[in-house]
Image 1: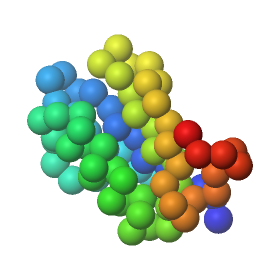
Image 2: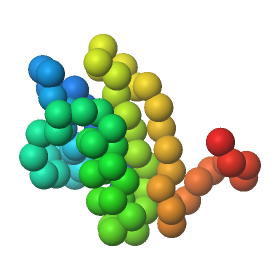
Image 3: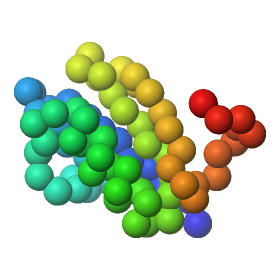
Length: 76
């Protein structure tokens, strides 16, 4: 099975969480609340990669959510 990915994406003044080409839940008012939704979804679906986009639409951060396969052997 391919690794799961969840994206936190800006939409106007709101944030949306997307996985498998579908929106997960409602629009979020803050990026932090969208990140929480994405982390919980990944944890409940076997882990994977969380990709957070900034307001400019560029990748701001990535994080591997347990029990996803983190290619790095150090924390950070």
